[in-house]
Image (tube, rainbow, N blue to C red):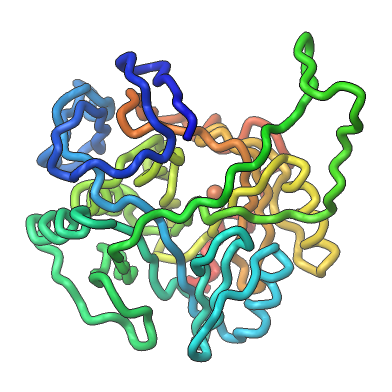
Length: 361
Ligand SMILES: [Fe+2]
């Protein structure tokens, strides 16, 4: 494990991907609340109701985004799309299609048969004591546990969020791929690659892990309130009432919400090893007959390079690289970005179809 220093917070050494602390251990963290929302029990808002203040607070409860599951009208079409994208088949005991990034053992995308594409469920991990903390938090928030949807994976607890999305919280930790060797990039005054050619050998993207999911919602503030208060996630950044980014790991975001007239699945996002891989993956998907997506570009919020490839149902799968990393005990001041400077610093113009919720058609 590498040791890193937290640049913006107290001078403490942090271990990357250190095991979770007991949930009831008070830690000094930052919390950002929501404008105009009831004040959560463990938050302290600044004068604008937006900023964070260092204080004693409970640690996060859910600790991982494990997988997302979609209903789709043709399983073979869905399986082919995600295999072209770079995922591989995971073992399946039934007619559910299960896919995973090659370096991982666990499935990260599940496809169920259904009349049209829609989110079937999200699964988060809350290992060990964290699951008990989640149950207590849900009770406190008045959220009822439900029976699992038909055919869904066994284990853990099931709830619905305020939009009606089914959510499974499982007593499982995060599975991470082996670390890549360091990138050797030559930059002005800093040479990392000497007498060696830099053009990549590979010609495809190899997704390493699922990073985040973005959902449409008719009420981003209501979703922020639920996922921070009931599940202990943290708000990393937002742009007005348009888009909001939450985390339950050291990733800048693991769950995001985009305002729409109704709920819907927008995209799942997978980490790759370089911006080369993003561009190679984008080309491969175009060659495979996918409609043009959006990118390559660089986001403002989250800072990652991106390419969104359009899936067969009008939503997206994203390749990302170089996302902002936020250690758990590091000060992070969530910002509310103006909408004209929130989404991307460079890249092709944002296409109209990017924000289109096809589930409402
Ligand atoms: Fe994304």
